[in-house]
Length: 353
Image (tube, rainbow, N blue to C red; front, side, top):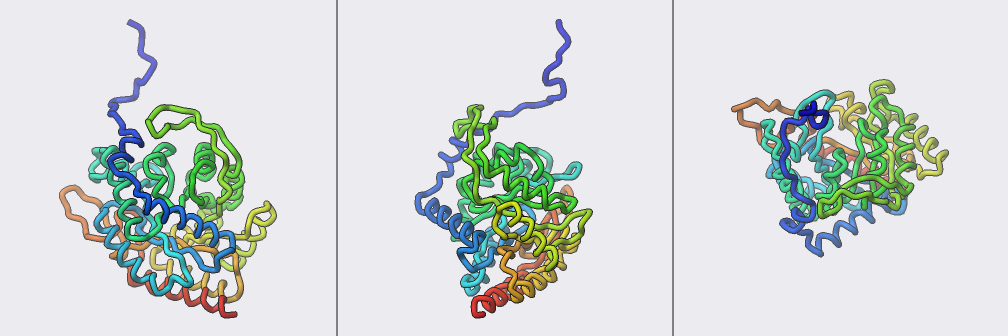
């Protein structure tokens, strides 16, 4: 018998549901499809300076409890209704978590939070959550980390994101080139914006790449290119925060120099808050000052927010607090409301000027 050379480090294999079967179980109604297409066009218009409003992409760092997320979504929608002349609310619905070494990888990979990795159940939950969010009338934003999972729920997403850890990845740039919604590319983890700009330009081109069809068949897909790519500033380990007036102005100049619109989205968490969730409000305050002073490049903000501020550990046998993050610490919904009202006020002042 020959010595095995294949799959020597694979210990298990489970069948994976196909995107088509999941969509048959949880179909997208025509009325919701119309709404999602409309939300995508609105987001594109805001980022292209055709709509004077500013995007507010807000929600938990990650989804671990669908019921709590929907509770947050209802309250978030209600607080934004009087502000919708100035901001366009989008719910942050993140199912995948990139880990520096190891850790909980998100609702899709481990929906039971116990290392059981019931991925089929996680995909089912993810699609159901997005259907419920869109039924509430809220557009959804999500990060695309695994290059195949998008086939299961991308039809329900109005704004996509490529994270700081994957923005230099060729396969993620290829993926973004075929996504049907506008996509934000974060600057690198070190803070360099050049890698994000390169990713935007790469995704504008057509690419051939291996993937899955909706029927689950391995295939080589050809994208047509995504013309709606935008830069997300999130700070970095080498640059520190990058939301100041000087940073925004230099970023706008760098975008224009590459024949891209002077449009940025600012992630108020991560490197820009220096990993202190309470500082997100300070970041918003600075951005509002810049907007009032005439800075038009700021076209959106991202906030990590949940029902309860802070975060909590997952411990075997211990109950979790309802509505509190198990990954990055988040602003409370109360503090988020104050930040969004401040943002809306700044946008309104510029409209009146």
